[in-house]
Image (cartoon, rainbow, N blue to C red; front, side, top):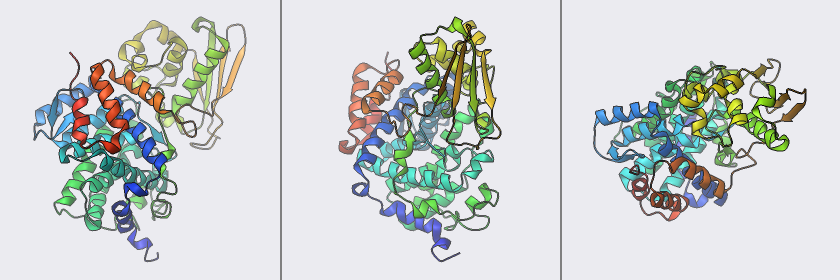
Length: 455
């Protein structure tokens, strides 16, 4: 272990502190604003999901200073509780974006960063700066400990809490030592388990990461300490999470900003698990090309690598949480519904007879011999009653790199999320301020625009 290796945690803290907005490429800044708008839509639309109302009641009961807005809920709470609630809201929609192979999301970062920026009265430019460094931390540490995902850890939370701590430290203008303490304190909070998919625990893990990463930076700002070599070496963060396979972070130090991992983020088109997005689009494409009807479908075969069933585990879902991780349900509604929305994965849609019947015709075939989490193939075959076989290798996915969503497509997604809950003028105002985040003088104005549900 060389001297530079022995100081990895400090080196990461230095990178967080020295990275400035004017050093970040224009494409990263512009795309970050699209990601911010997508995350804001998740915060708003998630607020009315039944499981989210439980968390709303929880943070109301906790009380605390009125520091930050709980989206589309009409009240403020402490900055930590707002981070918990808004991060949970966003994740529960399963609209969150992802970058692969590390498996982290911008939705983990924006809700707590918006909450802290609101409390501090920060301009939007500071949020963009904090987001870029936070994403680089969570993403590149996620790459370094990617084996942890194979072992059943959820990097959305495991390294997401580190990204939140880094971004919050940036907003708080912490020095290198205190930034390292924030990262160290957050490392002790990092967890998340893939076994939880299909339950409310999976969704709230992102809320916990938002709350705890924010708390870590706030603790460090007051002088609470942590090991400044927490990432590297025997029994360090990576060594423990990878069961000894990786003991030295390399990607986060060697490849910081080369290029920024923000550009690897794909925005979901459908409100369900990332690992089903390409197959849903494949069904939609085949339906458009060939015009088959639900009653004409005898069977749908979808072939997957051995990583997929680690997340996609529900053949016959019982509720919306399980439906978001059910290949049969996702492909059934892709055939049945003209437009795939949150309604397609609601409790009511899960129980509808047409969805229940069509789910029985979807077969997920797991190829254990394929590379775990590999880059393809992604075969899909729709077999019609007359014997016709319609096949597609679902390589390209709308919204996933390199086929990123346009700004207009992200606006459409945001409107789809916000229109049931926010007044039309507030929707327009929030779009304008988010896409103009660099010029926004105070993030509190943006959060005020999404604070109250329409009458």
